[in-house]
Length: 252
Length: 202
Image (cartoon, rainbow over all chains, first blue to last red; front, side, top):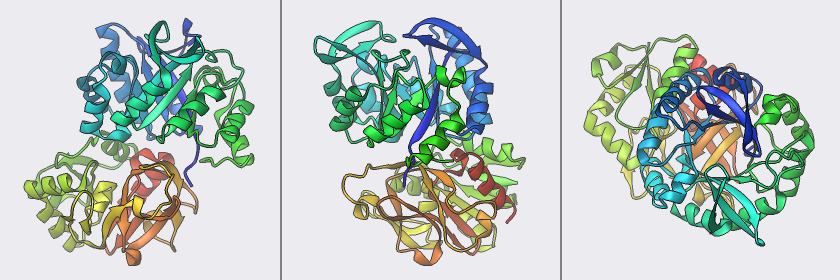
């Protein structure tokens, strides 16, 4: 049986890992390579690296670091941030990424998902969506959650999956950074709409939040979090042992 | 030295790095003489069977692989590289494989219940069949990382490990000096590195 995945996420800016609360107020946490090694040794099932650098220098630094990470650890790596073209896919895949996550790039160019899926396979293309409730519907936000696109989220996700996205990361802006649990109603709506793996992001504050996630929504494939792991509010190994103890399939 | 065969399919960076990580000399090569001089051969592969089989044949390296396998050199196919070891594949048509292991490649949709997601992607437990030197450092139930939509079928005599995904899927095969893993050892953490380590001790 396929195990549920626990995925630490590392936001990287100028070669360092940072994590914003509600996307604001960035704190420098640690070295991406050291954190990646630590997480890999402590049971992370996959790692996500988001490049939140805006400059060309920052981007070059990011690919150097990605190469170093891919040389050091041997679990699946997903890379996101600044992915706007198929050339961006190529750039990070060459550095050792296994999957590439697109967010604003897919909103700007709706053909990107299909083109990338055709060239690299569906399993390589991860759709990442920042979603917020607005006027009684789930709305897609762009630019790290700052800009309302006006698009309804569930139909957007379905459209991207039809185009070839092999996985969906659902990041709830409403619960992100709040640490009161994952956004279960939003995740349920996505799970009901698509048949590809769904990764829950935004809101985890403690071990019980992950247990509730997988018990309430058995169709969710993975839970993603950042600061609670970086600041060791939740120990990865302990989390996985407790989930396994609760009957959730885990790789231990 | 391990020769990773470069026939223009997929990214070999992680595979190369993983051998380096266990302290094995490794080279990524399309040079027949380098492959002949290596102690062990690794046949990688991602993508579609027909395309990969054609590229391997066009490169002429299919003959080198067959010749070296016949000479008794340890050969390990990974993912699509494992599927190429079989006699044929039914992935989008019918394609001829290397025929080193009796069996064929078929869609997992033919055997798993409807409603299960395809591809079979993620960490799944290995169920070992008997003891095999490739798995000397493993324990029953250790998890490895899979990404595939097709699987080795009608190859029961060669199966050395399976994974359960609504059905019992071929996870690894062995026949004499020829081995294959459907999963990715280079993405399977310590367990995966230990499989590569065991391969280097064969």
